[in-house]
Amino acid sequence: MNRKMKKILIGGVAVCVIGGGIYAGAMAMNNSGSVEVTPVSMLNIGYSENPLSSSGMVTDAQNQSVYADGTKVITEVFVMEGQQVKAGDPLLSFDLTSLNLAVELSRLETDRIANNITLAEHELTQLQQITPDPEEEIDPQPQPEPTPVLPEAALPDDHGARSHVISLQEAENAILEQIFTYCQVNNPDENTVGVPDENTQWVNERPQPLDGTTIYYRLTVRYHNGQSKVSDPAVLNDDVHEDTLIETAGTMDNPYTFLLQDNGVVYGKVINQAKEIGGKTYLSFVIRDDHNEVITDWLIRADQFPACADTDGYDVRNHIRAELPVAEEPVIDEKPMSGYTATQLARAIRDKKQEIRKLNLELKKAQLKLDGDRSALSDGVIYAKRDGVVRKACDPASPPQDGSAFLEVASGTGLYVSGFVSELVYDRVNVGDTVTGYSWNTGQSVTASVVSKDDYPTSAGYYNGEGNPNASYYAFEAYIEDTSNVKSGDYLELTVGETVMNSSLWISRAYIRKDNEGYYALKDDNGKLVRQSVKIGRTVWGEYYEILDGLNEEDSIAFPYGKNAKAGKNTSVQNMEDYYG
Image (cartoon, rainbow, N blue to C red):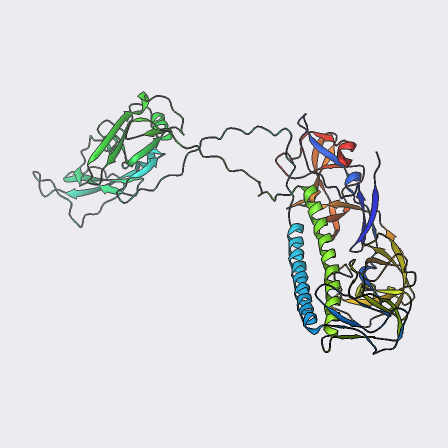
């Protein structure tokens, strides 16, 4: 099996593209149920770093080219091939009406391309912020059946009725506490019992009986619903114990009473709580209409009710088991899907960057055309910019159809290309330095020599001189003597100086996660996934992390997203042929 290796300079970093594309895998479950892991050596993009890189368009600094298209009508050509011309001599003339139209169309085209660049840059930023989805699992784990759960307690409406009840404490007469208070009053005489009045003092402890006095008690009952009641004072005889005086709920005469709305439901937990009390505990479930008339009063004895689960529901109106919706337990740690797997996301980012490069090339060409058309607006005539020889002059009746120039004036030999260099390495670019260029148009390489560099920064160098967007950039110009592999209008990737190799690991951020403890990967350790902390260095293109510590090329890691991305899972190493396809 052959592995094609192609070196590409992008943003000052040359990456190894295997098989024609950057591979970013994703975790999958194989037929045995284990999680596939990929050797780090396969995921490492490898790179050669060169901070002195740029890109630019080839121009005829010493030559003049005039282009014709269907929007501009050439009325007359004043020169012929081989003719000597001087600066200022007329070369050809355009019809002014068609020229004005051409200028307006050129302006619109320039604006359109600029808008497309802005849109593409925004889309690139969005892509770089996406966390990829896991690949579809071959053998997904079966999902457990949803577990029924009790609803939250229902609040009573204006009439005190609830939509459902889940606890004995929701009964209207569910007692929270009962408190006795006492007073002791003097009897007026042997035949008359004293009576407490508004000035009588009540205490919490039962007084000792005294001759010539009478003991009274009051019972205060507080209910779970916040209501309370206080009994009238009554004589407490010496032989009476308080246990015989307290209020008792759950009896036949005073069952636990629940007021429910129409179609109300009682849950089995209420009945099971009543069973735990023991004995004959009665429950009454009442539904009333808008006129407070009883629609139904379902009286049950808990110890005789059939066995039920706490989550079982019963229809009070019809005295039958109710059909209830099952509440699903919330899914934990599930993130919304992005629509991209790691492989698809890497491809989308690469394609978007290539689209931006092409758009920038189109914008440069459109701007040159607009500038050329505007220069002739005064009288419609194109004049020679400098002394030279007419190298090409076509017939207006049959202009070139391949996009080449209609007329050319040669004032010297060779071509020029302009690039940009960051302020961080400005001192390392000097006049006379060699520049290597790679043509996107032809796939050929060219060599140039730096002839000048600016003393002041420009604001137009970020995409031409790729690197740190916060740094200032300076323009430089290089002369191409041998033009056999390049022509004016070609777009070149430029490298100044020697390439510096680096041996650290560079892995797609799709394989690295971050939590409260820091960055980590899921590494294979003797057939089991383990959490491996990693130390992160730089990030290139917003896609690849430099791994400073924690992993080496002998390790294997899994895609760390999805329900199977857990420490302790069994692993299997991905097949080499599956990886390279």
